[in-house]
Image (cartoon, rainbow, N blue to C red):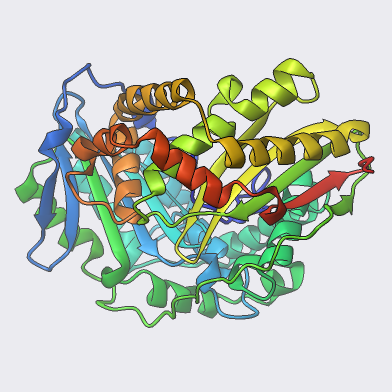
Length: 450
């Protein structure tokens, strides 16, 4: 699995600080098998110079648009942590002559869906509309970017919700583990920051408007559109919706993080609960590194392959110490990590840490088997089409490829990269990255460790 570490949404994800968005209505509308050829991705540029990827599909009479701006919570001004979250919250809370209630009611009347979220490195928005009401829906979208209201009632409500989420997160094991890990490996870097009650209360409407002006600029914008719309129609819509945005951003890019060496002993954060959350993190790989595809398959073998992975087989199936253990490649513009997590009873936390280290060491020393590599390739290439069974899924996955810097032909080329990986490639990558002494462990709970 690839993880773009993000700024969490209220409730479950505030630990890492990234936006969770409710699925739009398009998720329920599944395309016919083979109805869309992914080779038909078009690159469309508007008269105003805004570029989008388009997959034209008229089987379902609707349009899905995914948008992303480079920059998120890591780009917030010092002392203004949480301003990006407030901006994303306010994007559908009233625009033009429509206050919060009127804007929401109008969206419902149009069967339109629009919402935004903020991650550490990206700010994103999702939009879906029926073709029959697209004129009115695109005008609503234009209003949000051009004439955002920022009324007092929803702004203060946003602050209250964020503070409530922050307070709840103080007892959330995932939040505590994520913060402790970031503070251990990249202290002082924007990735280690998070909102506080003080920073949220101090945020003003002017702060939010300033960030919007700096962040939501056309030179940072990526757009993907899927659905019942032609290239010529899309060109008009792009300028309509985004034409009011600044041409260029003055937002500074965060510097690359330099991780500290791993700690010898696990970092323990006490939390009164019967289970211990085990979080571990070691050096990772850049997305553009030629060895990325070998690392991806290696990760599947270690802990990314569900119950068939080595860690799941050893820790769950063989010993019954956990319900689940998983690993992933964390791909961020300024930090690259190999991460993993599991939960176990407090009294077996030390044993789980030991077994994770032993499996990492064994994989680094011996590498995977030919059969393990074949199974990883078969799943990775065979499951890929399942990511494209609805308009919204197509749009979101294509946007992810754009965020990763992939070209428009990546969908066709992707599986060939994995097929080209040899056993020698994976063993070489394993020898380089599978070093247990390079992994930092954080334990949250009341763990028993030797």
